[in-house]
Length: 217
Image (cartoon, rainbow, N blue to C red; front, top):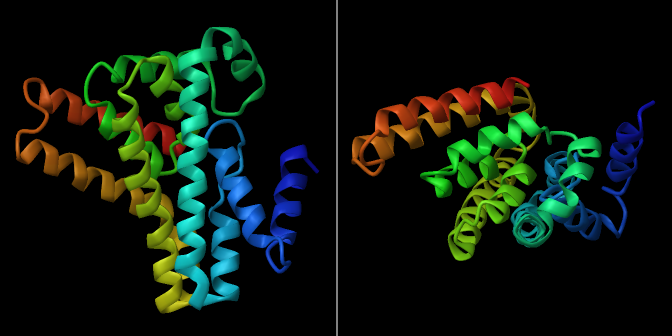
């Protein structure tokens, strides 16, 4: 059994314990900057066990994730040159090629890319560190992170609160497809109202290509 699988199993065993919320917040915080396991499975398990507390769990999960994202931003802003070899060697999702791709995309519309990473299965931690390393405006980063992380976790928790076990099976089966569809609609909205400005069509195509390739990986 792999190291990360053992960690995942340990985290899931916390779900029925009094330490579940603390474990959820720690996992959500860590995943935003360096940890490979997302908090969604634990959030779903906890929400299913206590549906009336689902939105409460989503709130703390979102708050901890944004705080972890700020840590990732700080790593990128202050320590990237000193720590990049460690991330490339040991942290899943980080590669020199992938980071160079993110750098190219950050020339414009960094808010959209952070939002996309925060909401979809794209590794959010890559974009939190990249935001600091590439000098994205801090408060714009916080706003993008807060909106996207809250949208993701509250959507999952809200659906479970309303539909229970039935929606869990649907989310498990179609999560990637649903998030890609949402991002395509979002990009279409920006393009429709001209918010991309000059070169908007090229940016839209790049965004959809990167989202699709990252999710498929």
